[in-house]
Structures are given as C-alpha cells and as structure tokens.
Amino acid sequence: MEISSVIAAAQSHVTQLFNQHPDPVLVYHNLAHTRQVVQAAEQISSYYRLTDNDQLIVMLAAWFHDVGYVLGERREHEQAGADAARNFTGMQQLPDSVAQAVEGCILATHIPQEPKNLLEQIVCDADLFHLGSKDYKKRDKLLRSETELATGRNISGLEWTRTSILFLESHKYHTAYCQTLLKAQKEDNLERLRSRLERKQSESLQEAAESESRPEKLSKEGKPPKAEKVRKPERGVETMFRTTSTNHIRLSSMADSKANIMISVNAIIISVLLSVLLRKLEDYPNFILPAIIFLFTSVTTIVFSVLATRPNVTSGRFTDLDIRSKKANLLFFGNFHQMTYQEYEEGMETIMENGEYLYSNMIHDIYNLGVVLGRKYRLLRFAYNTFMFGIIASVLAFVVAAVFFPVKG
Image 1: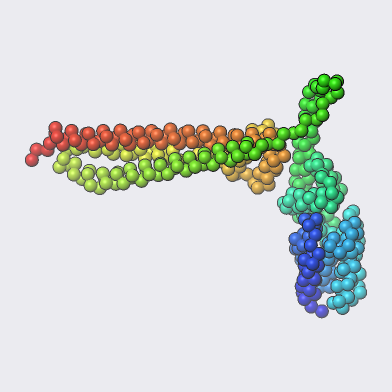
Image 2: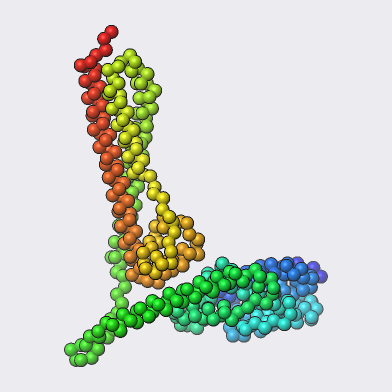
C-alpha cells in the first residue's frame, strides 16, 4: 500500500468537500485551518519517526478532523468527521484497524481532549498547535468571528478575553515535543491576554466611575431622560481629516521638489565655477571677490536646501505606558519602525477600540505634519532668499570689478 497516494486522495477528497459545501460562518474551521493542522501533524510525526501505517493514520485524521463542520451539526462535528473518514477508508479498501484508529484520533480532538495513545496525542496537539505559536492572535480573532456568526450574538472583547484565558490555562499539550517547542510562546500568548484583560477591566471601571460621578438630570416631568445616543463621527469630520492630510502631503512633496531644483541648479553653478572660472582668476584677479561671493551663495543655498529635505531619525518605539496614557502617535512610521508587527498590531487595536484616541492620533499626526512643513518652508525660504540676493550681489560685484577695476594688459 502506497501511503502517499492515499494521503493525496484524502487531500483531494477533503478539499472537494469544503468546496462543495461553502459556509460563510466557517471563517476559522475551514480548509485553511485543516491545512495548518496537517502541516503541524507532519512536523510532530517526523519527530517521532512513525511507521508508514501510523503516519497514514495521523495524516488521515488530520485531513478529516473538521469536515464534520460542513457535513453535520456543529456540536457533533467530530463524529461526523469520523464517519466521513470511515467512508473514505472503505473506498480506499484500507484495513478496519486503520479506520478505527483514524476514528479514535478524530474523536479525541473533542474538547476537553483525552487522547489515549501517541497517535491521538499527535492529532490533538496538531489541532491546537496555534495556541503556542505567534499566529495565535490572528487565529483567535477568526475563532471569535466564527463563534459570533454561529451563535448570532456579539461577544464583547472583555468576555472573549476571559474565555480565551481560561481555555489557555486549562489546556495542555500531550506530546513531549509540543510541550518543549511551544511552551514559551504559549505562556507569552497567555501573558498578553492577561495584560489585555487587565487593561480592559481598568477602562471599564473608569467608565463606570465617570458615569456614577455624573449627576443624573431630570426632565420637566421629574423623570430621568432617556440615554443620549452616542454621536457618531460625521462624514464632514472624516472628510476634513482626509483633505487636510492630503494637502499636507502635497505641500511636502512641493517643498521637496523646490529643494531639489535649488540643489541641482547650484550644483551646476559650482561645477562651472570650479572648472572654468577659478582657473582664469590668475589672469583676472579683479574677479576673485565676485567669484567668492558667487561660490558662497551657491554653497549656502545647497546647505539649506539639503536641511529642508533631510529626514529626522526617531527612536521608532513606543511603550505600553504610552498607549495607556494616549501619548503614542501610531500613524507616523517614525514612532514604530523599530517595533515588531505584533506589538504594533496591539497598539493599533487599542486605538481602533477607542474613538477618542483614534481622532487624537489623527489630530496629532496632522499637527506633526504641519510642524515639519513649517520647518521645511522656513529653510527653503532662506535658501531661495540667499540664492536671489546672492546672485544679485555676485552680478553687481562682477560688473563693478569689470568696470572700475579692469585688468591692465
């Protein structure tokens, strides 16, 4: 029996099942998740150097462990997946012992997991391999979205974070390989969840305290008024931010273009002065002072043009304290270019969950753009003034030198 051909047939069969029964609810338990589990199962199996027969069992279980979501009830998807796997092994004329082992591996993935042998342990650990990976946060979001779609209710961030913490705390990997490989990252994921829960709880308590300290107004009839609707940001405000940012960026581009023109023109002037005029100064000593004025004008103009376009180097990091105190501006790359993607994503999520913080960052970003533009245009104005007055002074100096101090032959 060629196990590679059987595994390939299982892959094709499971892919066809997912494609034939598309379900918009399955944003987590889908074909992508199945492939990730298969990849994890291959990784764990290769460590234990399984026999061909055991390898076949593990791979078939990995491919079929979640097809029950598209074939049966959500609560009993393990049994539906086991039944689908048994039908497939029958079509492939595999021994009944293989079918029973595959079924056992799939049923073992039911939460709480209780695997009875190494093969079941491998499949169980492959199914929850992401709990100890850097991909956990992304997968957890997808699971939350699927749960909301399946149950038809919105789950608050506070509630989901508590549930995720409880699940991670109660979960344990069964194979020694996963316990060693994934323990550190799993603990890190758990610590991040605890920090997020602590932050959300403190925000919730602060909001509750503010609402209690606010005196409740009574209407003319002596009844408390209805809760005021939260005003959503008007489209005009968003248009204002978008237009202002676009104008700032356009002005910055114009300033850079003007500075480049000054740099190019004066670089040509300097090259001409150095290659042609300076060699003639021995014959025309009356032109030394005008040449020096001309050269000084060009060099000064280039210096201030370069200063106008020279980028500033920033630390590129912000701390969790900066986020909590709403001091970090995450919309400017200079504040996060030295950070990891995961740290930046967490900061952006905090901003998106708080409308006030979001608009504060946008205001801060526009203000910083304005400050940079002010500096650019001040330096650029000085460069243009230096060039204008320097050219005038140089030409007058050349005229005076030629008329009043002619070279005697």
